[in-house]
Length: 100
Length: 191
Image (cartoon, rainbow over all chains, first blue to last red; front, side, top):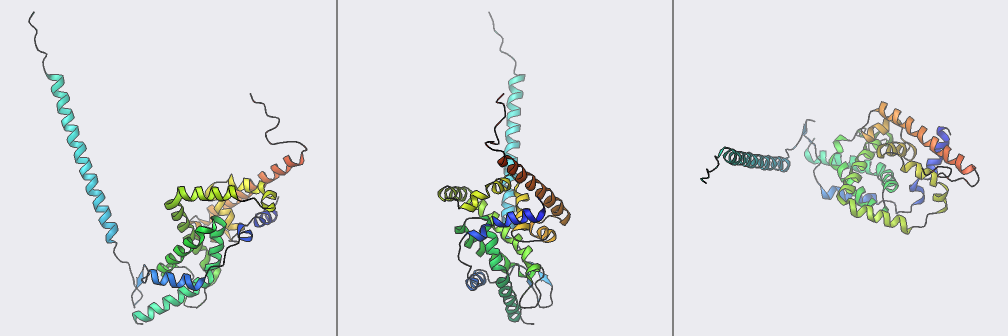
């Protein structure tokens, strides 16, 4: 089977040919995009230099994540030290002498 | 140029772009998901295009851009929006799609091409997307690379491999169908 035959077979099963859906209302799509977000992402200033706005929400999220990770690390470290101390005292404590 | 004029220019660009890409994007989504989701994803895609109107390649000052220049990039955006919608709504969407598939009686053409559907299903996600972009959207390898984020070289190799694989599978099915009374699992020992 050559490329043309394969292409013909694939085009015969194109779902866009068989599925019936109304054609999109371009005017409505444009209006809704323009009204939902009035500012394009990379605003160009009058002299053509692109200015990218800061992302305060992402920055805040990252900082919060870092704080959480630090707290978790501290907790783990504290737990490890406490566990280690208990183990050491259990191992080194002398057995009570039994007098028979 | 004042801020207002800039905005008006950008709006004019977007309107020109929308006129060129809205219908092909609608067809692109219709080929890949159920019709209920198409409108929502198309709206998301148009919103992303408006937000990134300055990044659209091939969008000059002219009122009507060339579809060959702008469409591959826009397909890439639609692909991303569709993936986001699937991720966000995954389980429910998969269930709805499965229900729709089981409820619908397959049209005669589907039965006729069941071997092709089976061969397409057996491909990996990216291979399937590459071959669909080639066959259904009619893109050249360079444009497929732009839509998928792969390199042109990678697309060429992948497309060549996938075409060979599909042709071999279809050939095999045809050969098996030619043998009277033979089923694919026949003649195999259970041990």
